[in-house]
Amino acid sequence: MSRVHRIEVRVYYEDTDFSGVVYHASYLRFMERGRTELIRALGVEQRELFDGETALGFAVRKMTIDFLRPAVMDDLLTIETRSVEARGATMDVEQRVLRGEEVLIIAAVKVACVGGGRARRIPDGLRARLMLDD
Image (cartoon, rainbow, N blue to C red; front, top):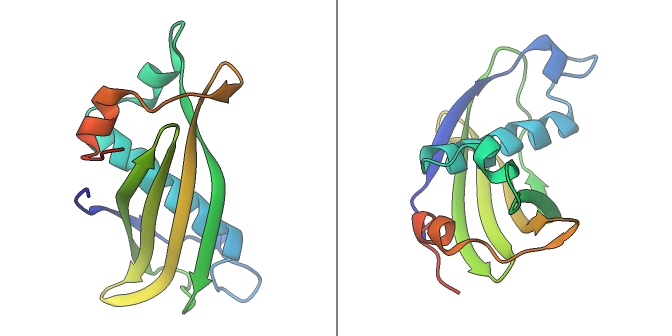
């Protein structure tokens, strides 16, 4: 199981609805940034994955989200991301969105590694960096 990766995200006006509360779809963007920065922190640039004959990407296959508390404009949020398990072409990721110590969002995400229009096994090098076993 991997370590928890953290990034901070400030809530801007564009992230909120008419009442100043974070719009639910904005959390999807925040969590996507968290997953992208987890991969970057492991020394893998997204461009590297997309280049060449063996171009790979990650697509969300399934996501379950518990919206526990709302965030509002100007909040400083922490996005926690942790890879949990890998099976062939898929990886399970746990994410949380926090305001200080307060947990606002809990998400379970299944991402699929894809290339050439179909599922591809997660490369062993990336699997090792994520500290995952099949």
